[in-house]
Amino acid sequence: MQSRNKMFDDLSQLMTNAMGVAQGARTEAETAMKGAIDRWLADRDFVTREEFDAVRAMAQKAREENEALKARIDALESRGQA
Image 1 (spheres, rainbow, N blue to C red):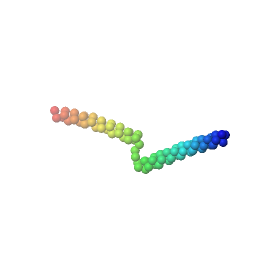
Image 2 (cartoon, rainbow, N blue to C red; image 1 turned 30 degrees about the vertical axis):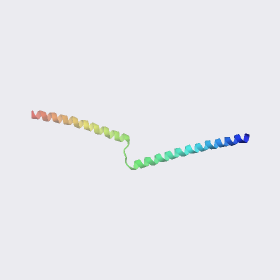
Image 3 (cartoon, rainbow, N blue to C red; image 1 turned 180 degrees about the horizontal axis):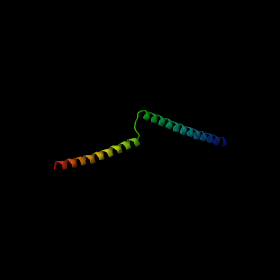
Image 4 (cartoon, rainbow, N blue to C red; image 1 turned 135 degrees about the vertical axis):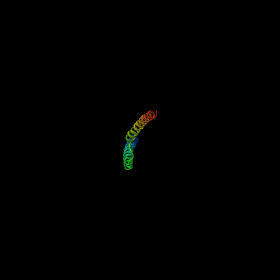
């Protein structure tokens, strides 16, 4: 009976170690894949989300300023024709 418990203990320890190794391999693979994807994206000159949002905000502000200037020009033109 004692040798049977020892066998189960050894098997349990082996499985625990195997799970630890598998988890480590998974983490290493994820890190390697993330690094490869980051390098690939950097080589493609894609913009970051922050850069995109900043440019979009600048474009929106420029549109609003253009609309305000157009309204002023239209008002000045209508005054000149009156």
